[in-house]
Length: 175
Image 1: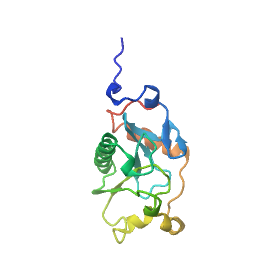
Image 2 (image 1 turned 135 degrees about the vertical axis):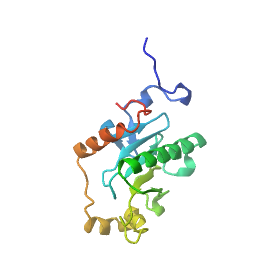
Image 3 (image 1 turned 120 degrees about the vertical axis):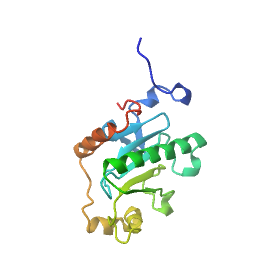
């Protein structure tokens, strides 16, 4: 008899722990997911600002941070911290930016709470706080026009996600 390592205490059905990865109105392929547990998952970014820029999301699609319950909130930040620590080392970075745009007026473009995790290096943005302009919706067109920030292919994102999965052996199986 095989041991099922899924967290039975979460109240989620087995089905919800498998292939359903939703980001707001978008259903994402599992190939873009590199970490998952009963309450949150993490995806590679279609338009990364820096190498290793990823998103951590609760499984429930909720537009505002205040809508998360205490367990989801704790799981979201615990995962963001763990992912940030491992990506910083993996990308030979010296710091990490964690960012949340909580609501449309804060620059949120997809109505699903998420944490941006960005491994950072000295001088990757001058001045340093320009990273927030790059995240801000109102600046998006300007950033896109004068940087290398372009949509990546599904294949590119799949390759990155597969590479990152090896950093998270405690993740639920992603399928």
